[in-house]
Length: 448
View: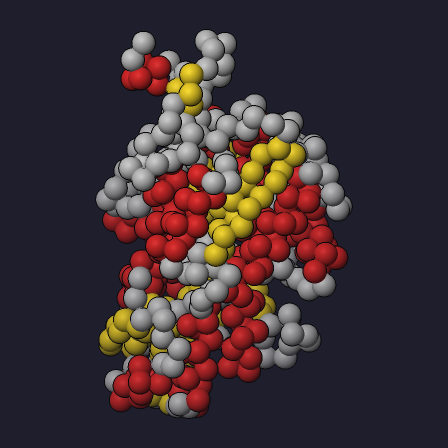
């Protein structure tokens, strides 16, 4: 019987990937289920947590890892169960996933695409990881998502905000719970118009990689639709730490708004430099100069300190939300670690539960069964209100938060206030929207 015939009949199991991406076949009996990459054979199943433990997004990575460890604890029946108690699906029962105890391995993406792919590849080949998740960079997410598609494992993206992740670079084996740059623009624009008016001149500083490019495009389109004029858009290296040379030209540009399309340590440093240059005290074109940070997080707010007060931005989730799911997660995370979780922690915890739930509902770890269980899946109770995992692009659609740096915080964690909860309908878009065009979802790859 030929190798191709075995593959078509689902009787060919994929083992470790070789240097050419080929696998050593193992023959199964006719009664076996379809073979797939790293099918669990013992009493446990291994998940791969690939996070930035070094680099400009390391703070997010540390919190992601905490959340993953908490999710594993809850899936295995430890702790108070967290969001398992509020999740609309009741498939998970605290005894692992589909009869298997959950184990995990970790890797350091270094906030570098090549390092992230190498780390994920090692977890798949050497550790037998059946699902990879994590990351705080869209460049990393796109790279690892592509690798997982090739390897035949599911990728549950962590913190990735570029339109491209579920746009031109979308893959059938990849899923994103986090919101995207288009959604930030759609949520922020009405608030910016209300707060700052419709006659503004904007200067953009943009991280020079996939996330920065699509964030700039999205917020530019949203603000120009208000009547704002874009004066200049300047790209900055991801490894940049001192942004003084980029801030100085803003002073004489005629702009009265600076939009920082930066995240993590980049945003902390660029915002700090902008405040040090006195931009927030300036009056330009008869208007008070303003700074906008389209994508915010509590960890960034903590790093920026006093500079963050009054700054508007958007976020995927915030620990102060009072829905039952958010309160349950904050309680669990706070009990274990002594402080509230970040949005990065939230989305990574949720992605782990969503993967486990899909396996449980499908009754199989087969990646294609998981894809089928997640596509078009609607759920609630995980902190973002009613949510849809859209089948056409594997993007989650849910409410988006507009936040502002608090003027009078009560603690080192109480740094952002929710200005508006933007309803899901306001941030939705068609699957063929121009900002998401190019590329194709393709077909699920089970790795066989």
